[in-house]
Amino acid sequence: ELPGVSEDEIKIEAAGDILNLTASDTDKKYAKEILLPSKVKPSSLKTTYQNGILEINLEKER
Image (tube, rainbow, N blue to C red; front, side, top):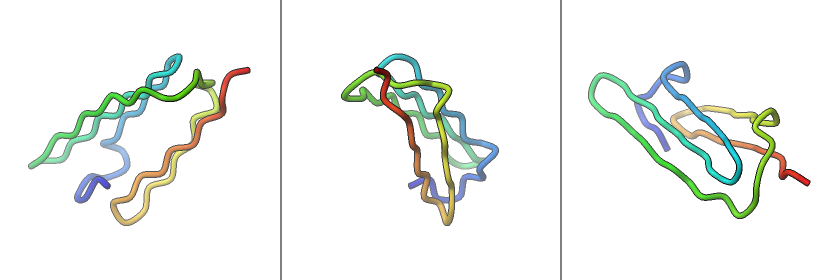
């Protein structure tokens, strides 16, 4: 959940088995590094953001 953050203030990067998420608005800053269970294809990154909820989808590397 990222309440109060607009979609264009969210930055997501995927490399290998790590997902980095940063977001900010005028009052809050969010930063999270997530270790994924397997390597992913960065080019497959797809997101949806509605009502403060961010959903991230990535394909596994083979």
